[in-house]
Length: 250
Image 1 (cartoon, rainbow, N blue to C red):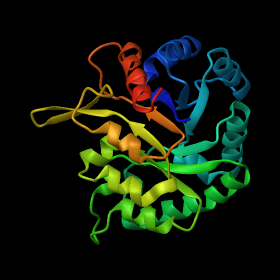
Image 2 (image 1 turned 180 degrees about the vertical axis):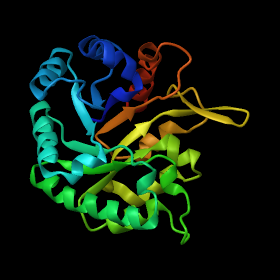
Image 3 (image 1 turned 120 degrees about the vertical axis):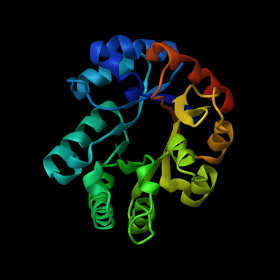
Image 4 (image 1 turned 180 degrees about the horizontal axis):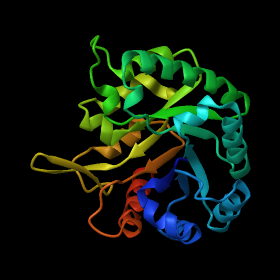
């Protein structure tokens, strides 16, 4: 049975003030899991206790790319994940220094190498895109072309952010069909259009056919994320849980 989680970056201000209280509210909103975006100074045992108390499960953890470059820090991420019961490590972002043909090739090899170690530990490694990966490079390729091609023979997966694919003019459903099980996580956020301005919003409140995208994905978790808010983020993300659960048949 597929379940719905919240990417905690959506409520980062609340997390910085009160981790346990935020998790409690997320659970009360009807979310069944959370995707971590940092540990907020708490170790794996503390996280496990809080998740258990509020009936939440981990739906992945975002891991800075720099941590893949050091074996000891990667081991710590793996150990933390095992403690809390998480099975997905996801690189969420790379800065501008990585956004050339040569650096995307280097990034692909870094992901390939780390994915073996992560898989040997019983976890999976993935990469989360934004819009810049779909920008043409000097040779006409995109960073995404390179990453998808160069990691194809390794256990590297992708977290598809449907807002950013559609923002970039990429057909999300075609991508999901092509990647199949390689798309091991999905970020669901709607697109609010106001004239020429686009911003993310509550699930079901915008112009994207998110229900159809969910139907064409095969991820165990559907992860809600939101970056722009009209009022208090912790409250604004609440209704999205029920919308996604309805699509999932709950």
